[in-house]
Length: 174
Length: 441
Image: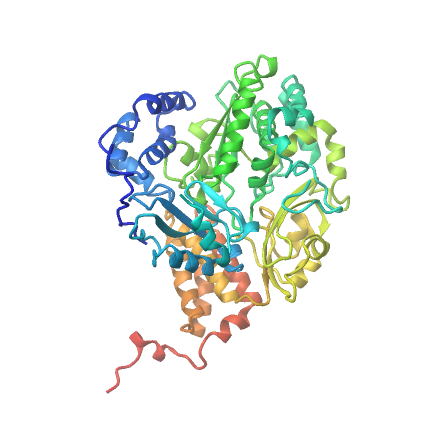
């Protein structure tokens, strides 16, 4: 799966060169560092901050995290690539993750994926729609198996999504 | 109160009693239900005394392994070293969504249980590691922790006891393997979530190489109830016929079932009544074909095997599977078992941390072979190859992810072999595989 399409939604454009860890974010990181006996332990939270600010974790973002936590960029990249939730490429304004693991799969989750690919005009998993609004991916178990099919759209989990509800769900987004 | 369905009269709601009650989410609401009274008493009690009550109650780990909680705590001695408590809220075993509801509805129940457990193992610091996808549970628990600090329940002088109890929420970033305790500790330290070789065990050298106890969310949430009402009360909630499995257990039910959701019953509850009465049986007009009773990593059972089983550690084991995390996944008679077992294998292949060759290669080859059988391109020899690979993946790696991938393949082939064979074209031989076929003119 590839996530190569650039999102023209401004996530990356304006302030990509400005440091993430300045002002309030620096203070937040400093407070976090008091919770752990090592600087390295703040790595996952620091990467989350970069993604919250920038929409993805760019090579520059990894370098900055490495700098503030006294790690090497190679080490940081090794950690980033292990975890599925850090975006290593820009994604659409609405990042749609549809659970298709077994418990949801038996309830028809693959049809829900097909409906999202059609209604968002993405057409293909991991590809951002031409208008930059959507990226649709399959995700492994979201831990909401009793509410098949659960779908995460950015930070929000939507329970019990069906083929029939996809269109209205998308219409309700910004 | 049940959620998303009302409690069934035959449920025993202890931990889930306030699911669906938004009032219970707040500190004031939780205290109105007697919240934090037990913590106050516990902080004034010797840790060994708390360990003994929990030992006596028979409480066992609810994350899947079933290790006696009080015994685990008793490994932590007052040795002057920095101790850590880690709460495993990385709930990611397919079919399991109980900790999600605990954290969404009763975050203070978790904070209270965590603070008691920290005191019981001589720790001043606890980390609650919650999977990154659980955005709402993370927000609820963070808010509960914030409220608890503001009220002096947590902090340098917890509830005026003179003892320090710090609780921090740590957000994961997407990796099933981080539910494995040593992988979780690596992840918390800012590393890739690779499981560690044991020994050393966490009680000797765990998080930041310090003595560490790691407990599941549901386990520590049972503790305040055990301490409030006593070990005898806790044991009275479960079937008296099996003293090895005590108290209540939350079961998450999903897949092809009439009423999916969480159900809390006493250990030893008859599985037949559970599936057909509480959960309403299969969807209308269908029959159950298969049930995975304890999260996707445990052997698949037939409905007949389930109907004869009782729901506790030993009961499900004697039926041929494991209680695991309590995630009950139902398959009805419209499901293609080859397709679903291939999908499960794909999950494990995706989630392998790739440290061990048997797992990295074994999960990938298992998927390739299962998917070609699914697509009508398999051979009879493939069935033997699958079992051979499964054998190489069982008991031979640092953690059990590899075993977990092999388990549904082996039990699926045993119980649903006819479905696999039906997909293999008759008389298909090596000669029919294009790359291996002899050249023809």
